[in-house]
Image 1 (cartoon, helix red, strand yellow):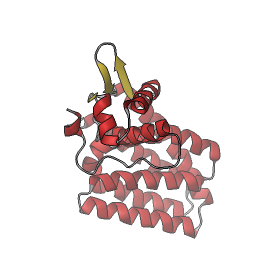
Image 2 (spheres, one colour):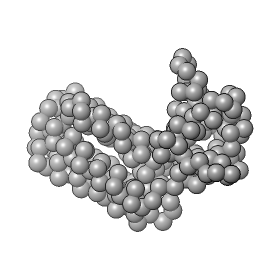
Image 3 (tube, rainbow, N blue to C red):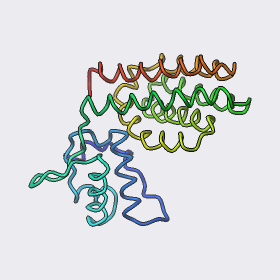
Image 4 (spheres, rainbow, N blue to C red):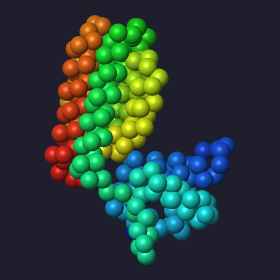
Length: 225
């Protein structure tokens, strides 16, 4: 049942203003990427509408768009289901992520000043606290913030746009391995910050490449999908 997949407090409030169908789409996408709605889960329009406090029509429109975007599978005579990514899909996306983020790390090392380093340090400390407190959702969100900040510091708008296209799926794949990656992930973030602060482009590239490859391997080796 849908209700079992939405623990209390997980349903996002619909932000205003903006078209209702867009807000419903974003709310459902957030539930999918955080795995409040899990891969393979049956999505019932009436139940989703009830959780979000809207009619069925914007939910139906959102599900159709999510299907087009590859987040939801619409099966004839069965309904809508959260897409279950194949190992190949995940591998291809995480490989592209490595390419994009390694280049971002190189550019960040070339361009980042003290203010940028301080912000990376702040995010890293926040992530480390989340790991210590076993706050997986906070750790996942902060990990995304950290990588987005590196991308911002790279200063390449085209690279940032490409990264944004895969960013949400990266978060989707990272969530089930966040606890396994745990402290080690943030140790690697610290190593990256040091390389960027030293303006060592080659080392920053290598650290980021190794870091993203560790996540890719952990995803494939995970015990619980």
